Image (tube, rainbow, N blue to C red):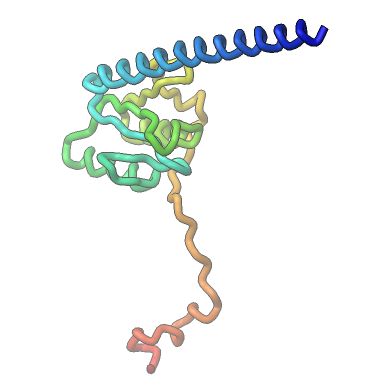
Length: 164
């Protein structure tokens, strides 16, 4: 009896290991396929952004908050170089999240460009401002509250009108 349970245990462990290896191999090929698809499609877009932590974006290696990204689009519009199609992809540090989609949807509305990303199934999807509930742009960093010592005209030693 003991011999049968040991054999059964080893057989089930071998099947389990084989399944894991098989699934890992399938997933790896899918990821490679998605990466190559993204690389080939980047040429079809005027601008490619990467997601970053806490709803921030990476643009040419620089980390930008949603407000900074909006300012960049305003600058491009003023210079006459507004992109028509923008692609948002995962970075090494963060995957595209709901905040990224909401902020980019808001920018797409404000600056009139098409915004796209790869969904969880690897399909290229246009960001719909209605579906993702476009979000008001905001800075990543919270402002530090001012203490009562720092408020008022007499507290600034560099203010000539304070009499210091």
